[in-house]
Length: 304
Ligand code: SF4
Image 1 (spheres, rainbow, N blue to C red):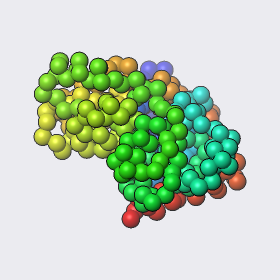
Image 2 (image 1 turned 30 degrees about the horizontal axis):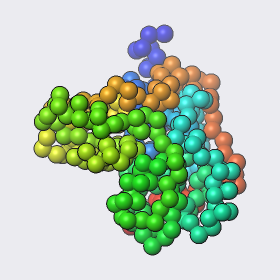
Image 3 (image 1 turned 90 degrees about the vertical axis):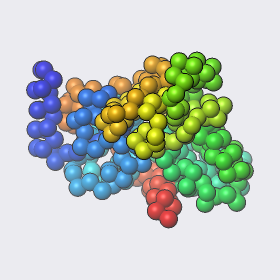
Image 4 (image 1 turned 90 degrees about the horizontal axis):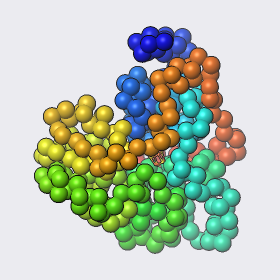
């Protein structure tokens, strides 16, 4: 089937099933373009909770579709590629966290949204890269464990001078950024502003003109006066930057900023998901209840 026919069929199936397609900014441009809504983890979670559609096709990785299911348990949530996971989320299991909590009962557990439902269920509050600073500002007098991303954890720890232990997980894409690479690219593009996602190592963040989650990076490119940017996050985000600020020149720091799992989803897999109802996400009801509590807490605090 050619691309035009494929898109036509996706739209027809979507209408017949009263479905909505949600896509993360790291997806392929053609997948972002067929989505009803493109966003970061937080915005997509909110969309999933608000939508009146019967079916959500989640173009992203497993923890994102799982979070959508937690917020819309009565809906069918489909992940087009069953094995699209997140290596960072896999860095901690619910059993690991249960063991840690038994040994460190005094620590309040903050989990990044990039975690399994089982880990969320054992956490006190969830955060995303967009709201981590705002939420953690409420926990300045707590003793904290932050899971699973050591980089974002250490970034907020230093910013608010927190008593925070960071789980030694990381994103294999962002964690590979180095100061050497930044120095080389800055020499090549001396007028460019450097903007970096907080999943990058702390010494790289120290070099940046702006640090922020995906939505923050887009806003910065749109509103700041620079005309050229070196972007330290997954290359898929450049598609949205080109759309929202076409007059700006955005350059990814390295072509290695490409998430293999995010790039598993294609137009073909979205089409198959709608046609064959694959792969439906299910979460154990007891786990779901605990995980929802951590997400509800995040949503309540991010409204304040
Ligand atoms: S970019 Fe990193 S954190 Fe995001 S899904 Fe891929 S591996 Fe996970």
